[in-house]
Length: 260
Image (cartoon, rainbow, N blue to C red; front, side, top):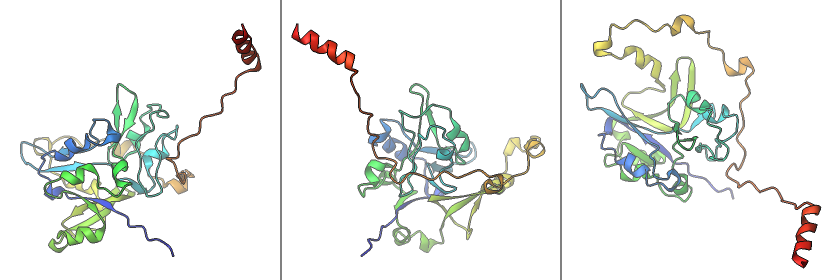
């Protein structure tokens, strides 16, 4: 009999975030982060609004982990359950490609140790059935961890909220493992359209960006012939060290010294 695996996701609800930063403090306690928080609290414009929103790794599924696909050293690996891990310190070459490729701006770079850090869904906890640190302390459930059914039972679905895990950046669409909770019946969240509709206050008279005139037309990856890298089946398997052999000449000299 095939065992059914229950997949749990994070549901981010900006309308519930109160900017208390409890999640930031709790994230520092995760053993794999070594005292550094991998979650952000974004403030829109503190002079006009108290609105805030938590930002953490969305663990992209389609396309699969753009940060990992552009890593030339294969330092960012993906678990079979869809969790995108932070860079392997022994492999990261600090090229910062992942920072440019991430559509959500999540990777952080350790300037002193020269490697990338980011949210790995507290894998030391979630792999054992526990919730990520940030979700266990959020007082308003702005960061909810569980199945879709558990999220509905918590009451948000009955209030008209709708989780979305498809995001549009112009013509590029990204589907993620985690969800953002909206109050409208939208199938996808078009971030570029929201940017066009946003009022910039005192900066509303700034000239239009020149990117629209200087950029080349968008070409799909399949059309351009860009392959998508497949994740190894078990990327966390420790690499076995190469066997070390002592040269015959060195072994002979050691033996002679021992006799003397």
